[in-house]
Image 1: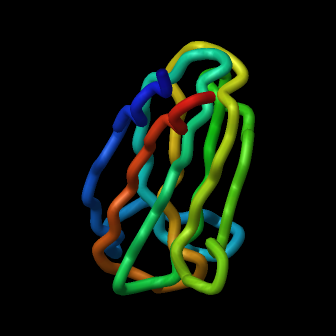
Image 2 (image 1 turned 30 degrees about the vertical axis):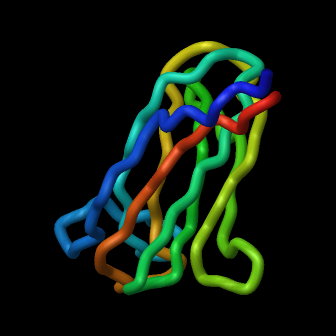
Length: 114
């Protein structure tokens, strides 16, 4: 019997001038966390009607695991990954360029049957 997808995180956010800034490109970002288990296969998606999104995923020890700019032909971002360890993962919800701001949604779901 296939397992159902689990929603691990769903959050709405907004990038504003008061958010943290990536020094290399002066883009704004917010951080979000979720708890994952070793071997769990997840999809992380960031969608925005207001700006071109960029996603980073960091392991519990802080090392970068993945990043994504555009999913297919859209300006939204997505990462599919098998989590390497159990712990709290950090998502950096970022704009792809300087001075991009607005509303966004980040979701993290397990992939069923994996």
